[in-house]
Image 1 (cartoon, protein in one colour):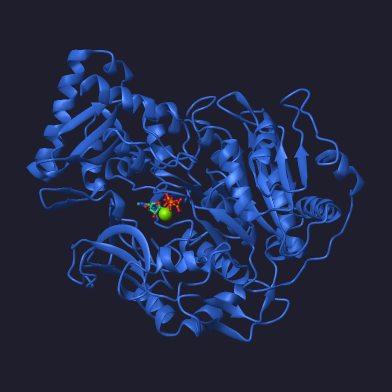
Image 2 (image 1 turned 135 degrees about the vertical axis):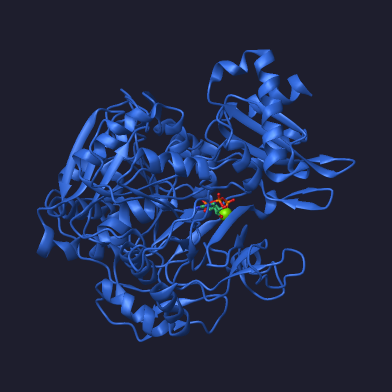
Length: 634
Ligand code: ATP
Ligand code: MG
């Protein structure tokens, strides 16, 4: 692997030298005394004694050289709005919001829940929090009151910042009533609520003594200047809950200095965005990709970030590519799920705009199946489409490509190699022995210390941090709860969640391999595969597939044919053991708000059990579809 191999080895063999070098990518108010303190494993503290601030590095630092460069370009196809902020304007807005928060009593170490749509004021709020040393915790706008209340009780905020409403697919989703309800459900509600009124819901009511109007308070603080609060590197910057795909979400606690360095380094080595260029991350601030690559990564790097409120398919499926053309986007980031949505539409939508400046499109969050990877690569001939694998916990990729260090041949179906700083291993799920032979399955683990940027602990629960992540094997390694193979070149292939492994008569099958085989069928748009209890075989494979042509769901005859064809496709590609016992055609699949398949809920419904924690589900009616399919077809 030539020079990347050297780079990688250096990061593991001389971590102090390696990370001290990366730490020069950000400003320190006080230099650190020690690169790494790993004296209390598995906890790690990076850049000990150093003092810095995320907001300073993302905003103030650029004023000298890029005051007039756009920092944020905002477009909402939902509310039909466009706004732009230069770094100088962003600086002014962030200072103003920091002054507002300060007046409401927010200070260093206080928690602030941000329950906002994708509007610039949400970004101002996040940056204002980090400016003050307050800890933000973003909850996906529009999450149910119960889900919001759970996170409030875990984070115990002094303030909640919200808006009257968000919009999705042309529908107004009123947030304020959800907040009001969550505050009655919560045991530890914040004393104050700051409400940004977008004018989407006439007559949004404010509770006197508790609720404060954003614009009114903002008018008071026009032109305010609030000094940056310098934090010790390990002081928390934010709390963010995992997607809840496999169970109850975990509150990931992020530090300050390690995160800033990790993101700045990732922009250079992985995402290759140049200062002054534009990055468009089509995601949501409610999940980790939004934190790292809508907000902090591009701004730390002096780039322009595109903030887009809307769907990839409205007004039509060319909208993203219009944004790419207009804003001269050179780096883009989204999820495979979103690309699968576009794949259901005509590919000509991608040809309507000039996308020739788009160097890289990064995809993460779910397995990127080879047919989808090939489809989007063909549709964007000037763009390299690259997978990368990570988690809320890590804040930046674990496995990925490294175009900033070395061009490597792309392998469809693989996110790439172990990234610098991560000592990645595969362990046998049963014996815990290391799997070293190529192309053998194992659980993907990371040897501590985790590199900079990764979670410092579970918020308020060090014990849960250790017991959740470091206690699966005899040796204390970080468990990703994903399983994978590695080939001769060191490229990894993710096979699925360890929870989702299907055991058919002693054969251990990954959901990914079967789903990939099915998604190769031209009539299938999306599929979820689960293992369902079976008296004879232990488990059998059951597939729920969404046809590209929805009318196939209505025609009974064509439906049975397609179901059989899908079974045959799997039998042919993977052999008889993997052949699904049943294939059900459905209109939708249940997913989390961040676009992940909720296989555990599908499996529960298929086994006639309760679906479990649904606090992060996008559309509860999709589970009813699964239920109906099970009832109808037995
Ligand atoms: P929870 O931990 O609450 O169950 P979650 O694991 O879905 O939820 P996230 O942190 O949002 O929460 O997702 C990380 C997971 O997403 C990874 O562990 C992996 O299963 C999956 N994933 C992310 N990127 C990729 C990728 N490029 N290829 C395959 N899987 C991916
Ligand atoms: Mg997880």
